[in-house]
Image (cartoon, rainbow, N blue to C red; front, side):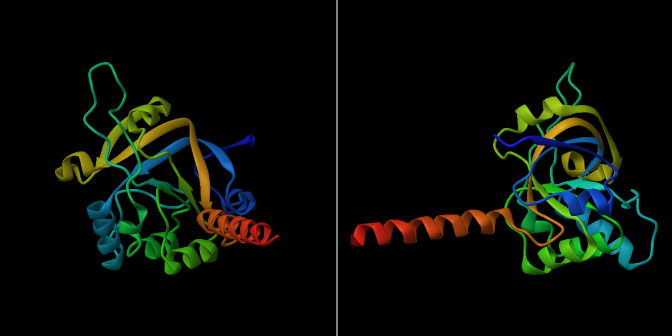
Length: 195
């Protein structure tokens, strides 16, 4: 089993450039949540030259909308949503200093190129285990767009939040690596069947 790399926010270009697709990471520090509508609002505010409600320099955005917090808990269930829904807004936010993103699923070519260009990283979180993921959240509070309810932007403080690097700052794509391995394995199996 791979060793988990310990990293903290705010992320630096140096830290991002050392990570490779497939690396297991334990992330600690401040993370912001945001989904489609929050991203659109951030993007539109940036396009108008307005001050954003969060500082993006070195920030990590978690594509999630936590469920309401049960009594005695820091946060409700918090799991990743499909990241492609944020692709239209991501290059602009990366340009403004966003350094890391947490979600699930592949990203468009434009986003992959922007990740490499700005020295950022895209992490994957375990899907389908949102209640389990909440155990690594130490603090949580709404910081912007409260009118969005559960999709309001939140500031989370996480401790050793488990992630895998899906797209690294050098353009490595973990999904592509897996697909290539499968293709190679199938070709080898076909070759063996011939003999």
